[in-house]
Image 1 (cartoon, helix red, strand yellow):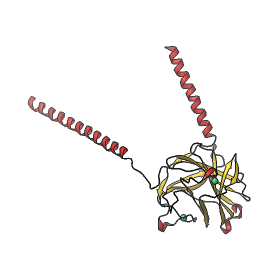
Image 2 (cartoon, helix red, strand yellow):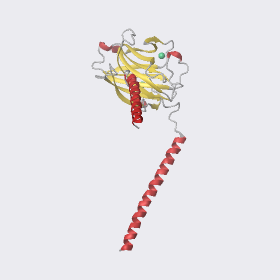
Image 3 (cartoon, protein in one colour):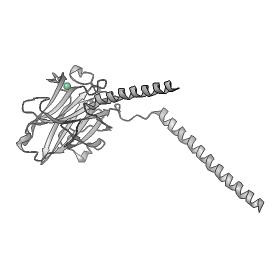
Image 4 (cartoon, protein in one colour):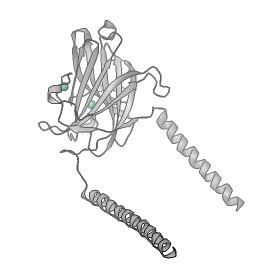
Length: 280
Ligand SMILES: [Ca+2]
Ligand SMILES: [Ca+2]
């Protein structure tokens, strides 16, 4: 008996050690923020939120911070991050990101060459970022910029032969808005891009930095990682008939049990009253 207890304790201890080391490996890259995604009409990628067209209305909207060190997070830069899967428009099924933030003095020449990049890891190789979509300012004071598509091999950034997706930004007073769109289910992406597909979870790393000569990843100053389940197939949400029937039957069963219980209590009360009446 004592032997068995020792064995069980040892087994629990080994399992704990294995689980902790697995967590440690993941934590050394920073724990991704798990988030949902919205579904709606594809936004126009122009660095402006068009409220008259309800642009980005159905996006998943969150505020996260970008950090220098993802393991010991402090003094982060808060950003608004909006995430939206969009139906084919006109025939491109897309994943869209909006990033919005202020800096102390955004239009100063200090960040003339600022950039936001979205690095993507394949669904079966989480946290191994091999694709990078970057909006790079060459002069933020004059709002001049370009959209760049890279593939990353052993931390070296190689510009893609064919650029996929689009991105741009716009600085207005002290606030900058970056908009990105990238294709989902783009079978022609090849090895230069992570092939995004619906129904799978992908890690996206949002990076901010300042690069005067396309010096990535050296120019990256701060970052954070989000983990997103691209759950919507083209055409939008699909309701599973089987799950719906199961939910309805569960409600009926529990409602019936509840009803019978109430009736049972009622009958007992009635019976009690009857007995009291006979006794008196
Ligand atoms: Ca827009
Ligand atoms: Ca690429």
